Picture 1 (tube, rainbow, N blue to C red):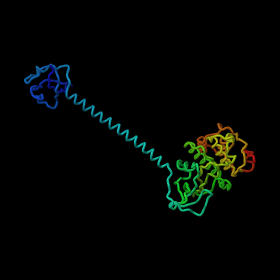
Picture 2: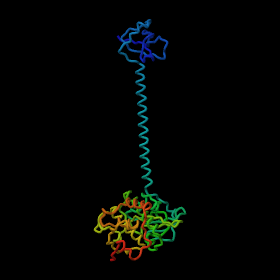
Picture 3: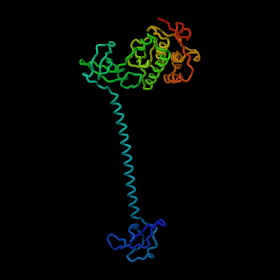
Picture 4: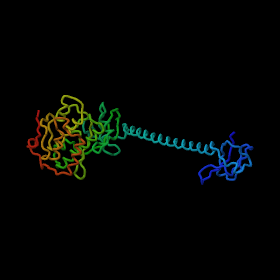
Amino acid sequence: SEDLTCVWWDKTVSSWKPDGCQTDVTSKPVKCLCNHLTSFSLQIAQKNSVVGDTPSQASTFPGKYVTYAGIGIGIGGFIFAAVVVTVIILIIMKRRGKKIEFHEIDLVESSSHSIPTNQIHLASEHLSSRCKMAKYQLVDVVLTKKEADGQSDLLLQRIRHVNIAQYLGCWINTIGEAYHVTSYVPGDHLSQWIKLGGYTDDMARQTVLQLANVMAHLVQQGVRDIDLTAEKIIMQPDERGSYSVKLWDFRSVSNLPPLYTAPEKKSGGVVTEASLVWAFGILALQIAERRLYLRESTYIRYTDGDESTITSIESFIAVSLQKSPKSRASFMELCQRGKEWSIRPKHVSSDFDDDFDEERQYNTKMA
């Protein structure tokens, strides 16, 4: 039969030994009578062990045994491992919970902020039939009446960019009319700025580059269905005499001038980045020439000149006003061209005279 044998751990040989251990098997529970209590364990062995066994009698240690200490260590290790795994799982779940919470906060922040009726103070000045001047927290703001589709309002809420007017919230007046509130941008519309023509060639290049940057950002955000015209852009001056482009209106234009409509869009179809690049090219052309084309103008000549002989802004126009949409540059490629302006020689025309169209292969046909 199997009996309990007291053993102790010999560090010198790294094994359990019964040498010198004695047990009282008659007691309940079984007692160890040795004096090295800090390094012993009870073993199950096929050997009779009684009080009085000598070291020589207990020297034959059995091959089949189970240590109680080993069982205890195994159970303790399992419990410790289980606790560690549980803690790791809880930490991962907590982190995932935080990420979900952050996404929900972002969604809440992107929802329309409602401005109390009594916090908006109307001014006597009306910018247009839809736009009014007002004061909000002692700061000039613009109220734009919301349209049925709400596209402009939604885009202003979602898109943040230095070249886009800052959206402040939604305001409903006392008779229930809804307006979206944006920061007031002092300056002239791009159309008026072009008409005045009081800007340098460098200002023209910077304006075109800013337009390319903001359009690249919009396209990256998935915005396609917008109509880009000179009336939707405000030129904001600063104290240094420079200008910042501010895009403030994302409404669709019901009677978009033919000039801004890409050739592939003449018969309808969806708005693509290539068709937006075309409209951008028309704006760049008018900025370069310092004149606005008539709404009925139709652009019929497509540039194919040698880029080594044209100015940097003209190269923008050249790759934007290609008849084939596949031949037009993307907005990101246009931005890259803008970066190269500062590292390559610029062939800048000093002025734009009446022969500009013929010399640069630009031409319009007046309807």
